[in-house]
Length: 100
Image (cartoon, rainbow, N blue to C red; front, side, top):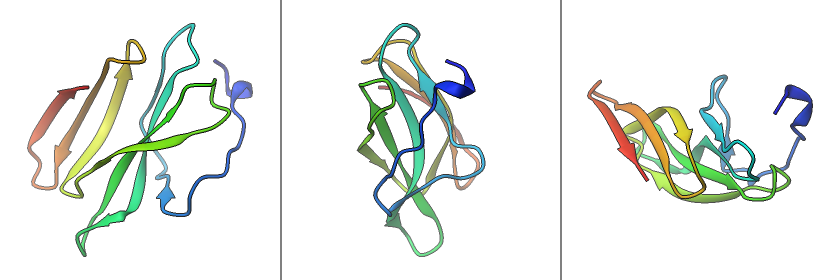
């Protein structure tokens, strides 16, 4: 996908995007995942994140897993619509790698 393949979409107001939001799309499929800020998850100091998923070639997005505000996803990589890897850190700098 090139930069010309992306279309601006409206999302619920609770979602926000930092200057670098991790995103992964599966080659040859309609599946993409992006990590966005989720204002519903707020511990008073940090805003949590949520996984937004598109299964129709980025035409629409649905929010799924809400991540705790103590963990920040820094990178994602999806090899299929059912297997994604995420790497990040806790707010106290412990490195975590997880698969879904």
